[in-house]
Length: 246
Length: 195
Image (cartoon, rainbow over all chains, first blue to last red; front, side):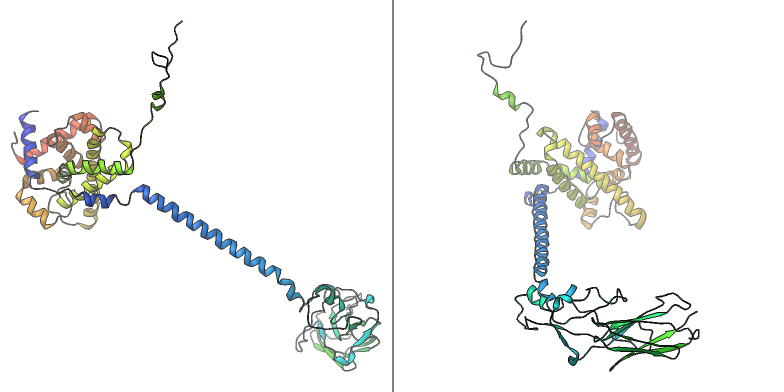
């Protein structure tokens, strides 16, 4: 070390001579308080707690969903589905082209059938309009499926069938120009159904199962003009609106 | 054929061989106690080194504390207690370099004035300290580039060898010589005849 180094070093010593920082071990200990190991441990604990909370919440949600599933059949008693369910009823909407129109029969049309095994096909009428449909109300099978039901809807020894009057229509179901339209529905067995319109009509009778089906071709109907088709059967009446397009 | 086997002359196995290469990690309390001891003994010198490098007393104290904390976090990297002080100085140099670079960025975007040329914004305490000490030396050091200032301070104030400076700064000895030569020449020009 030569004199040059010594002089410059001494100048630096003089420059820092007035800087007298005081060591504060307590402050250093405070700074060391958040050591990485401690932070990692805290993060692990918090992460584990979050995982447990997540799993617990998921388990509770799953348990709740299973609980709802177990009580679901209780609701089917009020709305039976399948072979014993009545066909869906939709109110007719006059003023628009309607493909289904029916009325609910009153209690005076209820008949008592001795043999319940002669039940009609079980498919709903809207999906297969050409087939016959018999609607039942409060069948005995419901009583067998739900023995815990406390409401006595039916007598266990008899089966009550209610023929619900309905009429629906399917466009152009046959051959011809224009193709005839099909009117079908349900009514009391033997009931006469009359279809009338300005451009044609027909008459039919419901069979023993209460189904009826009538084909009508409106050959003279003008193109682009709306006209009405009335379906009558006793006190029941339905109106369909047609417009020939070609 | 002579085959050497591990064992004592009496034929007993050397159980200590199992501990070869195994390093006993100090506990947290041991590390804290050792760090506090080092801190009590070297904090003033470390803070003064930081003061020469950054020119601010408050910033120097902060840098010194940060350096001790970083040494504590990387305590296992330095096995030899004799090298911990050198490692601590290396941390101070790096922190001062980072701080200087950050201050330069702030000045470039904000144009903030500084009491000492090239340094950070200083407080009234810094100004009083600066006036009572050797302002010419501090101003001359502040005017040097960062690497030259570090090399000159380590060489002339800490009396470190070029090899130690190279290890501390993380560069070659040739670079250290260059920095020292240029820094010395700049200081001589600014301070006059320091010989």
